[in-house]
Image (cartoon, rainbow, N blue to C red; front, side):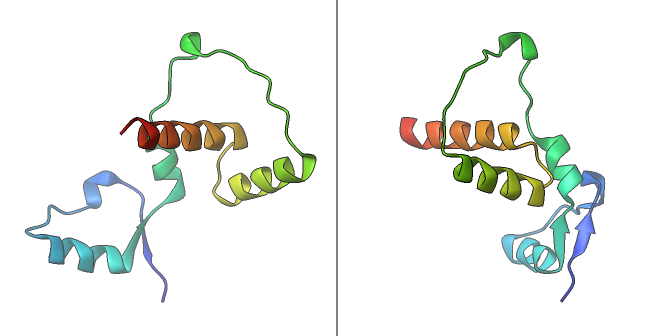
Length: 90
């Protein structure tokens, strides 16, 4: 079954209840480009460059995974770290 891509947030209806919303998302998915534009980006002036050493095979796997998700691998790593940090702080 092919899911209908949601390319604009305005096309997502307001749902009356969770059942209606679940039914909608069973046949729709958020377009990857829309998802990328929805990510909160930090101000580049607030960024600090770091060096991280890792196994070349791990880096290759990270890059491949990021490419499949249409993301820059460094952005994906930052997102993962931010999510894990929030989990740890809760």
